[in-house]
Length: 506
View (cartoon, rainbow, N blue to C red):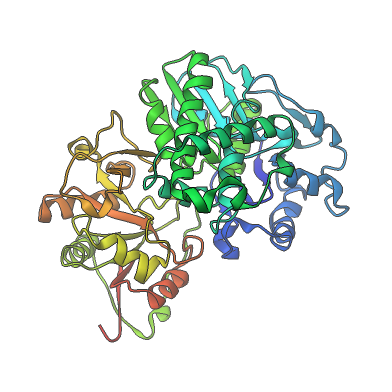
């Protein structure tokens, strides 16, 4: 059966057909696509054509507000007969509603299928944890047999992180900034008790009545850093309290927006032998999970998506007008980039298809020298234009990661925050002496691994600082967007596939 996966969400609209992961924000250039206009555009460009007979099955899931739009808006007629999705509460991983060419699963089943089927594990526990989905569901634990334990009342962690973020200038979906700030704080019993109260109020269905006044929480008085630190500690405590006792396997898969919490993911490696976190763990990966779930149930196939599942864009040399540029072989290009970075330069690195998810994994990256103690401030001020407390991640050759980081397993998708054990890489070391490491091997990304290897040969350091290729917008998708970001920032050179580009006055 030919399948298309579609996600009906309030944000992060996307689709997946088994090859192309269409992350709509990459084309709209609006982070997370949080608007009715963008939702309607997604419907016109992706959803309507899907029901015109090009696919045998359209596999869908939804967030709470996304499905409200779907079933209440008159022009959303494709699923108008599926009002029973409101009442669908799965008890196992592979349950579904399937009729008339539509295959519906719960939001958290989608997260779980994406993580588990992509892990390569024969069996595993699965933790699907995020903000809120249908029926107020926020956290499902699946044991190795696929049986669901609903932890939504005990662990509304995603909602709490988003609520605290909304109390600040970080806004909705700003939990990642809050996590970065947590490293600067300390434990507060006041904030811990406040979080307990918030959890109780959410469990009683009063989340819409939570105060939006920061003064009521003493944030300005006691400091947002301490609130962030305490919330991080509360999250780790809840994992131990609620998840650990449910363990049925030595393996664990994690997905959902909260799975971007690298401290949590690393703590879980202390209790599970292997922990797998896929690259597009938030709602941006829902369409992939929908496809994988339907393909497994209907076609009896385990589909493992390519991490680099974007469009292969054509490079037209005419777009380099106004720049100095030339085309070279990959070895020459890698040598130029390594020399530039070793001399203090910052490089935009654009290669082939884009990554799924919100982390740059070597095809849409900004690269710099991790040895430079000032590089974080330089990039934040001249390129990323973001808060000065936010750290940058290292991409490290998998052969050498344990020489620099205290962790017991590779982290190919930049999903865990781990202690740094060397003083040679201050540029990627956060204030709490940690880093969100990506481990890279040749099989995963040969070009990127080759670049890291050449930097290692030149400097003795087997890693580069790696941050997403963007400036106050989603990660660049096309060569022209890469050039536009290059032009308006302090990047020294830009590499697009086999082209090296300089600004005319350089």
